[in-house]
Image (cartoon, rainbow, N blue to C red):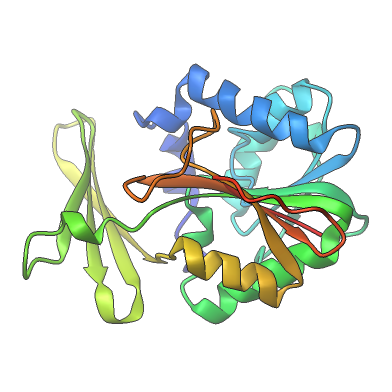
Length: 257
């Protein structure tokens, strides 16, 4: 992901997004899930952004730290009530190290896909493993690649159509890449385009990345309410655990060490 992709222009309108991930009920479900795993320990958010999850999680009493590549997004976080109290390191979350260990690390809303090579995604797992205390968990929320919805021979798939925003994914199937094209309506009624590269990842591939980093799958769910993960699921929340933590099979991908 280019360092300047989440610059001031995107940061300024990020919290105005019409997507479901900004709905209070959805945020509450995510926070409930994470609070239960964090316990009395600290949590590390990779790609903390403007604090969509970190702020309500901190309000629930969890000590939250963050990593993010975008100065502009973090500036928005720090301008919000309570945002300045959350320590954030500016850097690539695949490699940036910070002091301390955590009972929970989490990476939500497809943010693992911001790492556009398999090597970077593996490095992310290894970096998380280095930050987790024994028995800690790594939670990843990521959509299951929707290649089956592509018409034969097509590479474009709309993912959001609204009054102010239209989003279309362009798949590069050979290398598991995609480019998300966003068209935002401006004040004068015209649309402005922004595009960014991503790398989609399969559930089984995430499990292998966890094993490379010394972790094992603990749980996998279809959503934050712990609905069973079925072969037709369009998204997953997963938890993995390392050999130092018991790892019963389930539906979300959460990782632990």
